Length: 326
Length: 304
Image 1 (tube, helix red, strand yellow):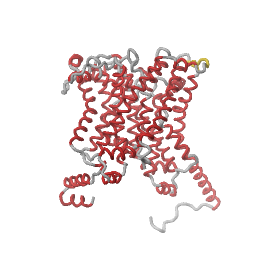
Image 2 (image 1 turned 90 degrees about the vertical axis):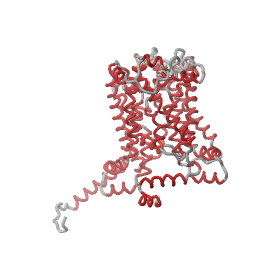
Image 3 (image 1 turned 135 degrees about the horizontal axis):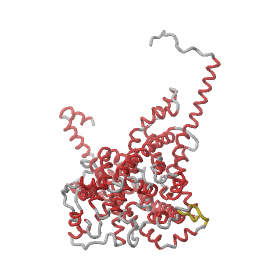
């Protein structure tokens, strides 16, 4: 553009320009003030409708006689809770849930720590190993359940065939209570251990190297520096892993649902979890939304309490000798 | 790295790579010590455990009922019957194609929606000033620990009222936002997007939304891609809610697999062929984008 080109925009009168400027400033102020709220509103609105409201409304439903088909009935107070807590089946579900949770979460964190420490060493083919441990994560839990239901088949399963080769009698993976829990815990860990490992690995890599150098100077061996440096520094990461696996683990449904084709949790309900019980109350023969909600609300409170205990416990385990994290 | 640069110029790329490796290894102290053969062996075993069940599934899917019944430990070389078994899955009464299509629709729409809304909210939380910002962000983080799955009963009642049961929209809408996504994008913007860039756009006369669209969104690409991946995987593998609200009339893949197991429970070659077919799409995705998944998990981890 040449410098002496004639102006193409006609000059406005002063008053019109002022008005235009004021309008713009106002619009700009508006934009600055309200846009932030506008941008976060989709999350809050949707979450309120599909997340928070249902959770709170569960408490309301649980105090009513409420049927899948008939809909809302009378207010019955805590009757649903009394009903549910009086059912041996509920307690069995709770026992199974906790047993499966502990059998999966504890080994998962321990194996994860061990694997992460291994991957943290200077290895060839880093990306390959990391992708390798993560592979099972993309397999749907339903599919994992179907695969392992066959591997752990009581009669024709591969697990028993392998045990037979080293002279161990076949285990009743489905019929036996504890064995079925071990089998389901194995499915959970098959899918999630790699994921947990990578989270722990990221935590390990954030630990400053000079801490280890100082430990070497002080004559600490590998195990000693793992115990006194790695674990305490990893505390926040471990807390995160434990809390997320608690929230997920106590709601477990997919894997035990697929452990046999009936999906009831076994002939004697030996691997029926609380969430499976919830489903059965609401959408099974009883069709009682009131009782299903009571179960949901009880489980919700349990998860809150366990989350709190976890937090307290994990802090104590690796607490006192370090300030923890950065 | 300058000495490595010299090596690259004088002795070529391969030598430079080797020099880098040696340098990295020599630097190893403490946690960064190098791995010995024990480590490699153990790692090999772990990778085998991670991979074998999938191969096992394929072996069974390539076999037939009789062979499977006679050999609890399948031969390591697949039989050639996978295509036959896959055809049987497609002809079985489990609406496989519809389920596949449904899964794709749900996963794509939820991924796009989660990324869009999370990026918007993340931009706002990380880079804009407004009253209540901190409190609202803390609220978002707290909701990550809320087991929303336990709200299924009222959610189901809500969907019935809307007449959405059996329709995909009942699965899509509850998955359209995640607290994790918002948290993730907020963190990313805080770490990477300089305030100067936003101010520059504002001074140039961009409105907020144009600033978002032309400055923030392009800058967010790597994190947004990772979030899309995670959302896609989560959606593809999710079972509980689709199982309840869709049922067998209009299933997603996991629901249809459940149907397959319930109807043909002794026919393992058929069941496993179904598992293989339902898993292949994500395995392909993993081959293409597994690296991003790995770095996404590691970037998102709580490091103290």
